[in-house]
Length: 364
Image (cartoon, helix red, strand yellow):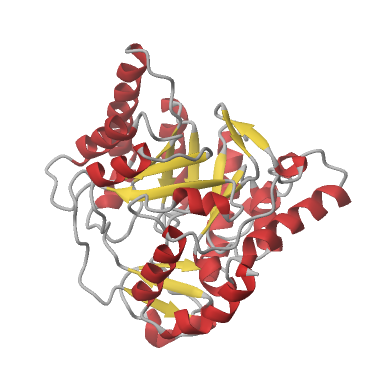
């Protein structure tokens, strides 16, 4: 019933400024007004990874719930996990409005939000007060004006260690000047050395291990992917998320909105992010779990990510255009796919077509 209500409300949400529509959605979730997912999920969708139990591989990407306001509602919608953030040590307002734009014909969004969030303390208090269970990751970043960006990531790990299921280290947002420079191999190696040392200190003090995932940009040059992956592999990260939003503007139908500055998410990101996903899967020989992100707005798109090498999936923009019913449609498509191919688990299809995807050009 609530799913139908949300479908009826979508024209209203689309008539609002994108940020207003997003805030209205968050308030609805905070009030408990959202369609509940069917539970439990079929066993073929479940997986155990990093010592965590995921009822299905489909999660909410960072950016939707920056301040950890609604992780349990997100899980209640039927998603297998939620990622909150990006969170920075100190609150910051982000860039000037307007800063989010719909590209309706492209089924895409442009955002130049700039890590707007209420800071570590507020988000940690909300996560510490959670009554629910389930996998909730924390995406950590650096303040725009910080003198030592790596120190901000270390502070994020230390702050949220007791309330995070895993950490996503966001070095790939295009909306904080210079942040993507942290993907350069030497800078990335230094950052990870410090983040992993912080985790080791906490474990030495008796804390459990917390997985560390690094989120990459889709705009890396083809020649730069291997050196970056080599650093991630050598440092032993637990996962790689591919990818953040893109600065590319190739092939957009809505050229006027496309001239707005910021990163594009949604359907135009699908091809490049999936090719890059497959190339990272090949470089890691499938030994590091990958999170596939970018343009997942249907069952076939989700399955393509898995076949290209994703163990987990994340979506956000797809929900803006397809509504909350997308979650159930994707899960049904995965169940049907597994049954048709006689797979015990949908994750058994991971990397099935990775070589095919990896051989494609990054740009269509």
